[in-house]
Structures are given as C-alpha cells and as structure tokens.
Amino acid sequence: MSIKRDLEFEKRWARLLDGLEDTIGKKPKDLNGVLFLIGVQELGQGLKNFSKEQKQDLMHIAICKVLSFEGFYELNYVDQEGWPHWELVKELPHIDLLDQEKLLKIQVLDYFEREYGISIA
Image (cartoon, rainbow, N blue to C red; front, side, top):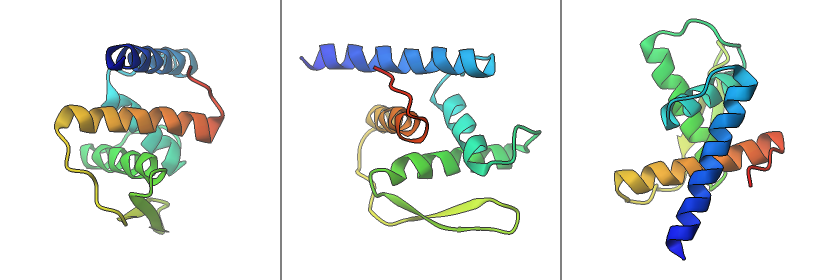
C-alpha cells in the first residue's frame, strides 16, 4: 500500500513540474528549483537577477511559507525592501534527508492547491 501511495505521490510531483513548465516555459530540475519559484512569487518583485545569497534567501522564504501551513513558521514582518521574515514557532521533526525532502514536496503541492486552487491529483 505504501508503495502505491508513493507512486501516486511521485506522479503528482511530476504533474506539478510539467504544469510549471507549461506556465513558465521551463521545467524546474528539482525541489530547489520549485522552492526558488515559490520564493520569487512570495517576494512579489518579479523575476530579476538575484545574487547567490538572495537566491538562498528566496528558497528560505519558500520553505517557511510552505511549512507555515503545518504551523511550523509564522510570518513575523516584511522589511522595508519587501522581504518577508519568518519565525519558527513549532519545532521541526527530526527526520532524515529523504523524509525532509518528501515533507517539503508534500507541502509544496499543498501550497499550489491552497494558494492557486490548482488540484494536482
């Protein structure tokens, strides 16, 4: 049963990547690529040239946003340049890297369903 559920999950993830390719014209390579896109979207300043540090910050914004649905983070404030700052309010589970990636992917799928009403079944 768990293998079937994992296969369904992987199919949903692949459909999300395909849908993003249709929308932006380029398929994200991996979870980090999707997180970067979410970070850009949440920042709300459009796509521009970001420094390496800003790209890392954008991915952090995305992680905080998607994990906020499960109550791990809350938006603390938005600074004068429009960058959101999040606060950890519930300790994250101690899980291995593969489970961390799966948790983030699940939350990313939830993000697109909640924020954009996109059902990725």
